[in-house]
Image (cartoon, rainbow over all chains, first blue to last red; front, side, top):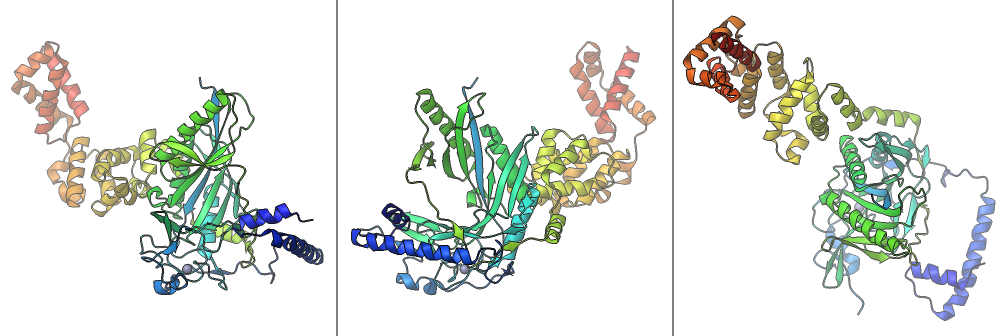
Length: 92
Length: 475
Ligand SMILES: [Zn+2]
């Protein structure tokens, strides 16, 4: 059972605004998602806790420097940034 | 007698000194231009996959072994979700219920053990720069590897908190996993503090003070928080469980967020990373790589008969301690070596930074100091000459054999010394009369004259004894 309050709490934690109209359908969807996850859990019961998807562990890389990206590339998605930074503007 | 006792646990973040970040090959070098040590992985672009740095796992295990922790055979990574601009993915990859290390401790001078709950690995967040209401983010630090060392609430005073943190810092520096510079943010700590009436063993409601970045700030914050909570309890009010920030300017702690909006991190397993399995062989290998740790060094040096204060100042700097150990090889009394190091070598390296790398070693090798001490122990030279020779060694980088002449190394036998003392008494009738008249001080210039006449080779104690005897006879 998923309550509207729980949906609002999760939305709040995720910084997502949910309108009153959406709340009803989201609550319904979330209940279905959880039911689906329960089904998956039931099927996968018996799997060892530490088995990854492939059953592998310790996929590690060596501590060797790889050149970073040019800053223009890094800041491309924020319109080139400001003075080399990612700007986070206050809402007006 | 204080009415309340403080109950404190510390969460310490230590930045690991790996060459690259925890999940990508970007450099961890400090002080680069903003956002120049970044790639799609560490700025959290969709479609990228993290790849765990082996050295991070090894450093964390070493930290665990050095603090008597158990190492988890199987550990895993989890996502800690929160939305804040310093975190580009809106989650931090950390460890939740399966940390790498657990169940250790750190011993204080009193013998008391402060238990360590766990040590886990995680990624650092980016740095926020605030300017006129706007915020600017630099992700160079984002993805730099951290270990978080969580203590049990075993600490009962500001002094214990300080000692715990100092020990932790020293251990991490000794094992080479971090430079632990508080001023550069590579060692930061959160303080969980509550009060209870003295004699009670119940736990009070605690407040968490975030991000202490210096020892003095931590102490001030703890003192303020103690007084604040004591006042609340005195007035019959409740302490709120909340997160507080220490304001350096005012010396106060202020509420950041209370229980009602306590963080719900919605931890879940990181699906992009496989579990970490640590074999007994790996643990054994890492154990063998650990150097002698501060506790064991301290114990050993105390057994040499060195004063506790001197032991502490030798152990505090690993490079100095190594220099000392090397200089002591084949020496009868290590205490002589420690006296010369603490008394004379330390004056040549007054700052912590200099002692940290033991800069005098560039001029005077440990073997040269050992040579000097061995001359002293074989009676070839006296302490006075040893001290002046050491100063010249430190000035010139020369060894004792280069500086001391055959004459310097010839010993003053007792017959010759008696003769010199007689001469000094004959030459200084004024001082002799003063001394015989009861002025103990008048002996000093006479001893000085003997030392000058023997070029410092005489043993001052023997000279004093001889002078007294000769003057008593002459009376
Ligand atoms: Zn990167």
